[in-house]
Amino acid sequence: MKKHVKDSYTEQAQILTQCTLNGNSRLFGGQMMEWIDVTAAIAARRHSNRNVTTVAVDSLEFKGPAYANDTVLLTAKVTYVGRTSMEVCVKSYVEDLSGEKKLINEAYVVMVALDEFERPAEVPGLIIETEEEKCDWEMGKKRYILRKERKKVSECT
Image (tube, rainbow, N blue to C red; front, side, top):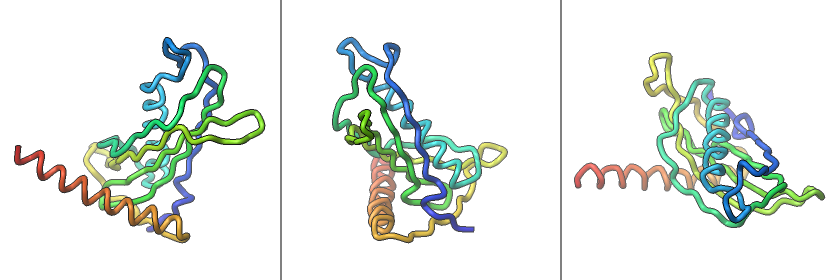
């Protein structure tokens, strides 16, 4: 059974405290990566109704900082699916007290659904409804093909 993109949508919010900051009082990049991984996993679990594991971070781009006491909002949605894999786009924002958001990170994480024996399991198809979802799907398909090509190259060396 296919699922809508909105079925996987996930949000996570964090207020930055001292334990999440580096020596320059900015958010640790590794902390952001952990939050991205968790948020992506929740979106993938919602899509697949299964446990999942991370197999690749296809892209992770830091676009701006976050500082002490900032609210960081992460949003995630499934953008492309294969037979057992799901690409999840995670966008991270600093949200000010007025509710205005500034994009600080964008990542594409590839998750694989697992069966009860922790082997890859088939995932539902994705229902594409909007132009944005269609664009996300087409770009996800291109990234999927590039990942397969990179894998072939690395197996030969």
